[in-house]
Length: 274
Ligand code: HPA
Image 1 (tube, rainbow, N blue to C red):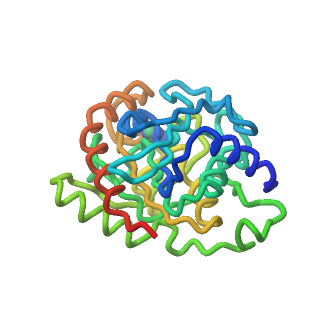
Image 2 (cartoon, rainbow, N blue to C red; image 1 turned 90 degrees about the vertical axis):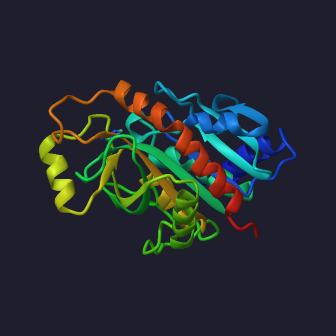
C-alpha cells in the first residue's frame, strides 16, 4: 500500500469538511441506516474520491458520511467493498487506511452474518469476540511499510476487550440482549453449504459472513481499536429447513434496526476520547 495514495484520498476528504473524525464506522448490509443519524453530515460518494474503489452490491449506497453522532465526530462508510466483488484485499481495506490517516482512533465494524451457534436467533446482535480468517489470504501479504504498522501484527486482542465490555454495559443499560461470539470470514459470494457450516461450528465459529476480517486485520495493523458487531440476519445454511436469500438478510436487519441504532449511538457517546 502506497502512502501517497492514502494521502491523496485523505486530502480530498479533508477538503470537504472541517470535522476531524475520531471514530470510524463500517456499516454492513442493511445497517447503513446508521449513517442517516449522523448530524451535519457531509456525504461523499465513493466514486468521487480519488483512489477509492466503487461499490456495486445491492443494499449498499456507497458513500462516506462525515459528521457527528451524539456530538462525537465520526466518519461512516455507508456500504463497504467486498472481496467477492472482485476487489483485491488491498482495495477492500483501503478505506480503513484512509480513515486512520484522517485521525480516527477507534473503528466500529458491523455486518450481517449467518448464525452458526444454534442458541442464536435471527435478529440477534452479536459482539464479535474474535475472528477466524477463512479467506485463504491476508490483506497484509506483500512488502510491509513499517510506517503503517509492524510486519507481524499481534491479533490476540483484535477486538478490544474494553470496547466490548463497554458495549455490553451499554446493551444492558438499554435492555438490548447481545450475544458474544466468534465471526468466521469467508470469501462468498456463495452462502456456505450445510457441511461447511457444521465444519465451522466444530472449529469454533458462532457466526459467518463475507466481510469484516480483512478490515479488522488492517485496522489492527494500523493500531486502531476495534469493536465488531454482527447482526444475525439468518441461521446459517442447513440449520433450518429453508434456503438462504439476500432479501431475508435485509429484512431481518430492518427488524433490528432500532436496537442496532440505539446500541451503536450510545456506544459512540461513551467511547473515551483521547
Ligand atoms: N453466510 C455468509 N454470509 C452471510 C450470511 C450467511 O449465512 N448471512 C448474511 N451474510
